[in-house]
Structure formats: C-alpha cells, structure tokens
Amino acid sequence: MTVLDAFAVLTMKNNQRGFMFLSAIFLTLIVSFIALITLNAKYKVQQRNSTLYLTAINLANEQFAFIEGDAGDIPTEDKKSYNGMSESSEPIEFKISTSRNGNRFTVKVEWTVNGETETFESTKTIYQTGGQNSNEN
Amino acid sequence: MKIKLNERGFILAEFLIALPLLILLLYALVTLIIQTSKIAREQVADYVLETEAQEVLDRITADARTAYSVKIEPATSLIDAENLILKCHNKSDKSTTLTDNLEKRVYAVYSANGKPFHVYEVRQNEIFRNPITGGNSYGDTIVRQLKYYFVPEKKVLHITLEMESDVTKQKVKFTTAVYMPGYQSE
Image (cartoon, rainbow over all chains, first blue to last red; front, side):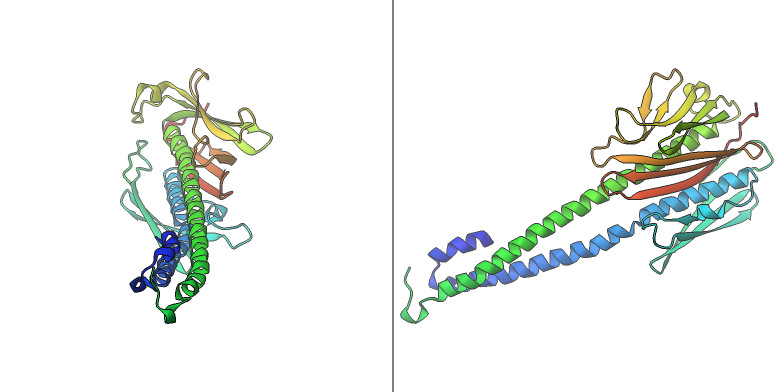
C-alpha cells in the first residue's frame, strides 16, 4: 500500500491530496505497536523461566531419590544454578523443603528471580523400609 | 491531472516529506522482521536444548530404576564426561517390555566424525547406537559435562549434565539423582 502510494502521487486527484501523508502516519502507528509488542516479548523470552522450572523438577526428583535411599540432604552446590544467566552474576538459589504425611512425601522447591518467587511442588509415595517402591507424581 | 494555480507544488512538497518517512518506516519494518526472526530462532534453539537435556536425564533415570548393576567409565579426555553402563534385569520392578528386563544399556558420550560431543544410547550388542542429543535442524547442541556419582550403600545414582546450544551458546546445567531399588552389589 505504501509503496503504491509513492506511485499514486503521479496520478493523484485533487480530493486525494494528503492521503499519502496520512498513510505514513498510520504506518508509523502500526510499526510502533508491532515494535512495542515484540520488544516486550523479547524480555519475557530472555527470562527463561522454563529452564529454572526444569531445574526445580530435577532437584525435586533428586530430593525424592535421597529420601528413598535415606541419603540425607542433597548437596548445597546442587541447589545453586546459573541457568538462564551469565556465570559472572549471582547464582539463583533454590530452597527445598520436604513435608511428610505417612508415606506421602511432598517436596517444595522455591526460587526467586527478578523479585518474583516461583514454586514447584511434587508429591510421591515412598515406602522406605518395604523394599518395594511405588510412586505417583 | 488538473491542478488549480494556487495549489501548484503541493504534491511535490507532500512527496518530499512522505518519501523519506516511508523509507524510514520500511527500514524499521525490515529491522523488526529480522529481529523477530532472530528471537524466534534463538527461542526454538533454547527449547531444543532444554528438551534434549531433559530427554537424556529421563532416559537414564528410567533405566537406572530397573538396573541391578551400574558401572561408570571415563568417556573421553577432551571433556568432563563419563559413560554409564547399566544392566537391567530386575524382576521385582515393573518393567514395561522384555528388552527393558534383559538389555544392557550404555550411555556413551563421544564425538563422531569431528562433530560436537553428543550422548548416544548403545544397546545390547553394541551395533545400534542411537543418538539422543544433537542433529536437530532447529539448533544443534553440545554436551559439555555428563558426570555420575554412585553411592552403593544408599543405592543412589547422582547425575550432572551440562549442555550448550550451538546456536545461542546458552548453557544449561541440571543435577538430579535416582534411587536404584534393584541394585545388587557385586
């Protein structure tokens, strides 16, 4: 449309004057809106919450394995992650807490990124002494 | 085209104002399209990276659950990686297929034909080598670290995996562990 406008100048009638200028203004608005939406999306994409969520899932599974094996608490260095950021910045620390209701174990993983606290919770049935293990996530 | 006397030059003036504006806008539009494509490509490449890393961990933990024997060997001197050899023959655990019960599974890290390091699953007879990572046309990945630590008395296999996207150079590092209920000390 806009490219055609340039050629339309040559065949422009009196009552069409200013049309090209108007379309340029509209195009400016449209491009501005697209840029606004895309640039907003860029920051959300770069936050990479999915990687941190995956990290939390794996940490919860690690905690379940340690509970099943009665191996104590998972190492502190495992609870720190540089996923989604450069190694020069401070690592994200994951807090892991476990609660128990009979043989039902619930592991809660919490982490804070950009001032917002995210949580992942997983529950599993573990028979620590029976020798046979069943699970339900 | 009929133009009144007092309106002469209006079209030329409008043209001179609007044309640079249009060129500027077209430049902005093209830049926007290029940026959006770049973001989309990076996004897909990072998604591939996460998916492949999780696939490796899922497969290893699923096999380790049914394994009665575990052996860890150095994979290569070039990167910090180890090979994992599992023997799965555990009647007390609920395996889904016959092959799950009988096969030896090897998770090997190596570089084939000068390509980046990938994780391969080597089956019983060591002829079939199934690549688990790499080769994705949306973005190749490189294995930077794959380490295991097994505590026999607790039957807990500790796994650390670090991978990098060849497109975005983004790194992800996951640690997890799996309890091996059928493990028998040799």
